[in-house]
Image (cartoon, rainbow, N blue to C red; front, side, top):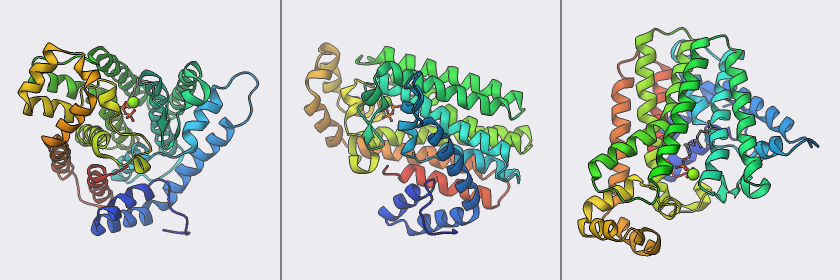
Amino acid sequence: MEGTHPNPVLAPLRQVGQQHGLTPLSSRLHEIEAWLGDDLRALDGAIGELVESLSQPDPRGQERRAAGHLLRVPGKRIRPLCVLLGARLGNRGLDGITRDLAVASELIHAATLLHDDVLDQGEVRRGAPTARVEFGNPVSILAGDHLLVQALQRIARCGHLTLLQDVLEVIDEMVRAEALQLARRNLIPEDLSVARKTYLEVVHGKTASLFRWSLEAGATCAGLDSTTIATLGRVGLHIGTAFQVVDDLLDVRGQPQLTGKPVWVDLHEGKLTWPLLTTLERRPSLHRELLDHPGLLVQAQARLRREVLACRADESTAAFAFELAATAHRELHTLPAGKARDALTALIDTIVSRVR
Ligand code: FPP
Ligand code: MG
């Protein structure tokens, strides 16, 4: 990598490898960084310019500053990396179109977080007070709307109508998944196998759909054939699902100083996560008790936390994430070998070992 400052896109991922003693993974990420360094810096520059313009005082309203507040602290930027790697698989490097699509995927993600923190009453995100805490719920919603429009404008000007149509479907999937999750909040399911299906439906919609689109978008603008695009779409679905399963895991055993958000928030919000589902399956008497006294979900939080850890639901959640990663690897390895495939392979491994 040129220069000495850490790349905001891969540096957080590389730290994951180092913290876990995964030197081969961390050196693989160094290689990606060396190869994609210029693209990643251009991506960072494009988002940085937008943040700068969003941060200007605006007497007409606060929504742009609220959006800048979230974007100022970079996230992991995995979705834009998926766009770039999808394009690289088709030998297309960074240009105006791939950059716009990559930035758009990050802006859609940021928009959903601005809305999500209102739905979840989130207090802390990326180690800072959420936009809704700083600017209020209504402004956080408008900030999300603003970023969504910014993203759609970038996609529209790329000239691939199908990408615009696909992303509108993805947004619709996200909204429906969030609505389903909201409707099931604080409800203990009788049938756990149905509950697992509902869980996967929510996760595919709220998280995996955008990973899928990001890989497909890069591949589409690189002119790859429809079979390869479909394979990449499935890779995106699996890694996006693994990403959310790890998010559930970090909710029960993450380190807030690394994740930038507190633990046990999902349980507090009455969300049916993979660790909670696993606990209900492994503790039938607890499941029965919660069905008979649903109020316990709110009242017995400390006991529930102990049960989740005691029955090792965290370990089986991690194992599920690794299974999803293995499926993603198998799909990926049907595609031609090369640097882009290696980089995606390393990215999958990083997602499942992440601690932030
Ligand atoms: C975070 O999940 C939230 C999402 C992955 C998607 C949120 C989507 C919406 C609110 C609907 C679509 C909105 C727009 C603007 C298109 P989480 O709450 O499990 O994770 P967290 O712990 O990071 O909050
Ligand atoms: Mg949330």
